Length: 241
View (cartoon, rainbow, N blue to C red):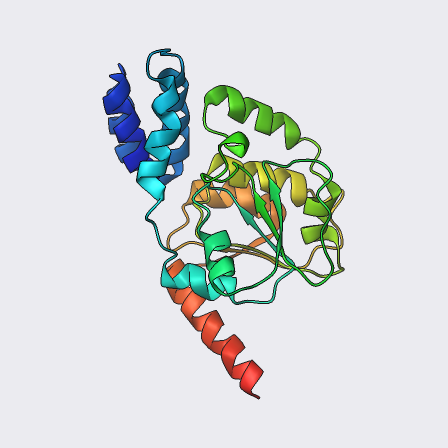
């Protein structure tokens, strides 16, 4: 969806560097969010149309429904979920199931996690709350600064219990936010209590492995939807027993 949004904004703003989209196609999905940053920065620089930015986002996301895999994840009992994108689909799926949860948007300080409720972290905000959105290059620079000191409630999702595992699901191994999270949450000097770390991706490259091997990642080389389906079936069977 980020590519569709980027192309819509590029069309409305007459984005001058169309070759960026060719670069995106060659590089693959991990570059989607970066190209969107470039386009949003350009879009917002044009005074006569900058107010249309959020209208374009509404147009792109308002009718979206959580896919089956997201709905399955929303039914799991987990301490929290860190979302690197702002589509809000996991939050929507939780609401449709009347599940209670707490939220941290764009690494805001002071978010209290309520006992027994999962914490949903929207690193780049959520489309339905314009004040939280992290869209432009400038806003991503600010997010990068906040990532140097992750709020305790968010860090506790990984470090809060000895042996707790972290699962990277539905994100590309080269995604810049995934890299930053790995560097901050899985630093072996401060995360000795973290359990196994899993990364689901059908075909990680040697370049991917060169980075993630620093954090002792165990690769699950499969389609994320297939893994979610298998885990969901196993969890449902366990509940029945």
